[in-house]
Image (cartoon, rainbow, N blue to C red; front, side):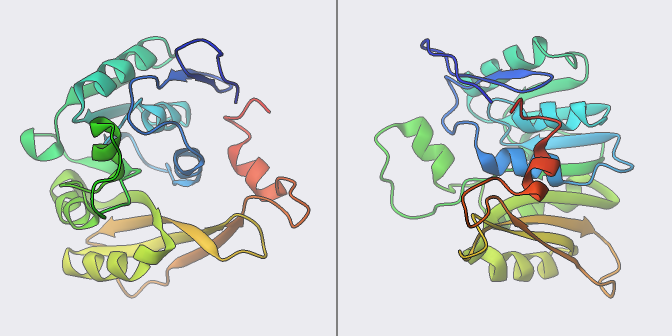
Length: 240
């Protein structure tokens, strides 16, 4: 992944590039991990909630998802996502919609994916757009999980990334809203550190008696080299 030194920040992947100059939250390891990790078997259609620059939508299309609706409430970020999609090989596979999922009527999809804002502490960022993205506001975990059943076909999945500290909240909310945790991966910076993130897949109206697929991923080794599992997971996207 390389950075353009001019005013626009461009991240170049193997098959596409994303400019995220206007997006409040920039391209992150969290998004790349989620987009590479989520199962797309049997997924023909998806909604990308809080799409930002559109990186998750582009990753899904590269992995074979036929159609993605990218929802982004910030108009400037949505315009940037439109540009990124237009310059990609999948310009006809991605629709960018300015707004939130409760404002529109959609055909139900196989997958809802989101890298949501994590923080609901008092406002600290002087940049209002960045603050809106970093602070949960209306797009908190409860809103996402409670909204997902109306967007998903039966058996469809919600994929998201959260801090480890939100684990109990995600488990509780999913039990309230007919969303069963079917797969989760705890992400560690290295084997000596506690997990920092969890990648989730929740299924709508799924069999809650089935065992959850529990995984663990270390990004780096104790000697600070990228692990084989991390390289293997992201190899279709990162240039190096």
